[in-house]
Image 1: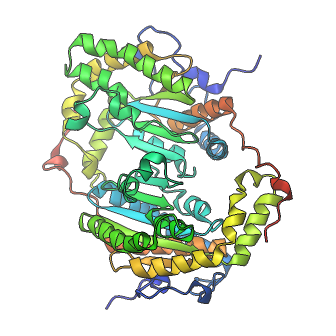
Image 2: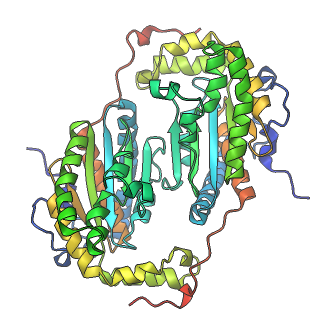
Image 3: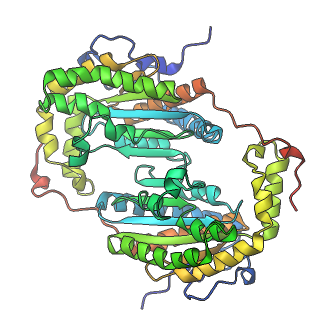
Length: 273
Length: 273
């Protein structure tokens, strides 16, 4: 039997709600060493990701969807930068979902998401996603409970469709502690270079911390699946988080095992004149 | 008066057809030194590009469109990889235009292109573009001459629209020699690792070399403009090409001079609890 992939450690494997308060957001378990050693391994994984992405793109028949979710200041932007810098931007697409527009609201909640799923050969990263429709929408009572609760099944069916048609899906929640969020928001305020990032609405959202954690916990359990697993990555420490996310992506792509396509018939004898 | 930007050297400034045969595709004029010195300067420019892109993205009110054209094996893919690796993929989008689909053909030639222009804050790179509609379409007589000839004015008007609404446009032709193309295509055939890239159609296209060069020359002149300039970059040497393209992008972004946006009012006194 093959060894279990390193990333199995963070995988959600049960339908039961995940109790995020019981998970240490500053954990560094499983890291290949201290901060410096882990950063060195991260660089190796980044190079490996670039190789695997090049093959996936060349193969051109399957795709990878990476869903990234986190609380405010959870590190989504920083993760995308740290993980994908160095990977060929041709073939990697980042889609940020903001508050829906009137046109988007005039459609079902998966409409705008479906339009952005990866093409064959591509890796697409969702910075926020259709999961907001069972998170912020739930916390702020934007639709009745029966509607958001029904969305778990809608999401499962949607992701089964993507999987069946050639898209591999990984879903990653960057898990930070309330204390870490406080420090990061305060840093945005205190550092003039970062102050433009500060959104006063983040302060009122912070009052809903427990409600968000509960909504996350239930959504993770309800929508994790063998073909579309959730991973909860301890994210208080950026160096551990970056290493863990890269490990998840490399494990996933190695499982996919993309290959350069065969050459056109007779190509090896061709002579250019 | 400010010094002329380095990239002015490659800029097309006249409506007259460009005589590509008179331009040395292996030129290295203006390079900051030999190959090693130029590569070192390229790394500096890449870091500067990353800084400027971060500001453009944060500013969120203007965008940059980079149109990349070249003959087959001209190095478009390699240029994108070399120039944009290391830049935050959030905010950089690469769009590759292939042979149009039936739905695309059922619309005007700018329809599919317009749908892909950059959002505020973004850099979008067109790998091939609407210029194919005055290049391959002309060489293969896919529409009557009056139609493709009329497209020069259509393209000018379209690019004026984008410019007026906040999109800066740079258009870069990677100029290789027929001999260099021959070597690169043969390398794709002879190297088993690259053979999957080889497209037998490239051989028949190569017979139209002169017709393509003429079509390029006229299109460059007809559509270069102060607000949407064409640059012809000598591209037989990859190291010179990468340096030149980065120089063009950095000069363009420095001219745009993007700024981090101001903080929300009262943000500096906020306390996170």
